[in-house]
Image (cartoon, rainbow over all chains, first blue to last red; front, side, top):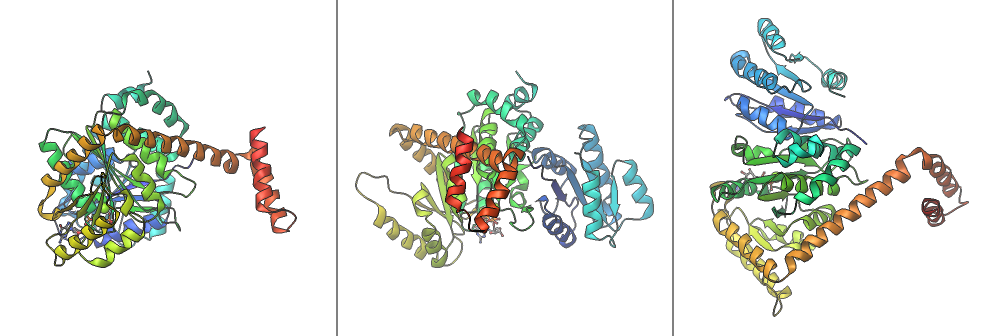
Length: 131
Length: 313
Ligand SMILES: Nc1nc2c(ncn2[C@@H]2O[C@H](COP(=O)(O)OP(=O)(O)OP(=O)(O)O)[C@@H](O)[C@H]2O)c(=O)[nH]1
Ligand SMILES: [Mg+2]
């Protein structure tokens, strides 16, 4: 029996490009994970529905800027509401210090800045994912 | 009845999702639940969609699902993408084309990787179809990339199989070379907005002429422009016509039997592989046999016979 780590990489919000999200998606694939990628323009509800149907262990949110804070918080709250507490939620991008705190309070376990190496992210996931 | 199976039968998305995961991971808990749900499955109509990479299969699946919803049907979708043989990971991107279906409770979408060569794929896809079926979905659509034997095998699941091509002669010929011609119940030439469509359809028709004989249903060729929702109604009408055809000719039951046969073979194969290669009982023995094969003290055939003899004792 081999349990594969399944990750949803989602990009909530209405703005433009998803290069960063795709780089992370490919890197996690290369680390042996199954990465579900849903593209741009995800609403909080879509992210959570997808996480449920795909039974993912990890939800990775692409935080391009702090501009969509409310959206990220919405995702975290929906996940809490649905009692999906065994799903590891992480985020990556440029987020101001104050917002990082808010995200962590809302349940985001890891927030990775632009300087984070892929290895760091992979290790974090492997250590913190539900077993 | 077990709680998880009960929740699957009542249509609970989280239970459906979890049972599919058990099946993919080969978790023994899955097998027990599958035993419980089997009697409730068999009502969903299964459509297989395969064809060349990037042909627009996911876009087409999305459009078909929307049309099926308009016709009052609930829909399960299983979208299979290849697992990387190097890392064992996979990038599952079919959902990108299906975003507008996500908020509809009458639709359940699951992405799957083909996973390792010691099986997993086929039996997990069989299970996913059976789970969605038992959960009450009226139609289950399975999307696979149409290259290689695994994909041809998966199509054993479907009641109606579509092979999706695009304008341009090269692709069609490649597909036909890959032996996919024989599995098509319906040919779809998608991207009909592209130049060369007439020619591809004509080429295809003449290839069908070659294999078509008297008294055999002629495989129809349909044109779609999935990205503009064109041709999808006609396509689903054709699926209905095919269903009527297989039901009235007795082929429907034959296909279902073939599906269960393929599933049975897959489960046995997987269990045997696990038994021989994963369990400690055989591990040491196999190591020493490999050593002897390498030293030319034994050959692989005799080694295989020795293992099988042990197994059958
Ligand atoms: N011109 C044109 N492009 C289309 C049509 N249908 C889909 N596409 C485009 O073709 C590309 C691939 O579409 P997908 O639906 O992802 O194709 P697919 O066959 O599922 O791809 P894989 O799963 O990767 O093999 C996308 O850019 C679509 O927008 C169509 O009818 N016409
Ligand atoms: Mg696809």
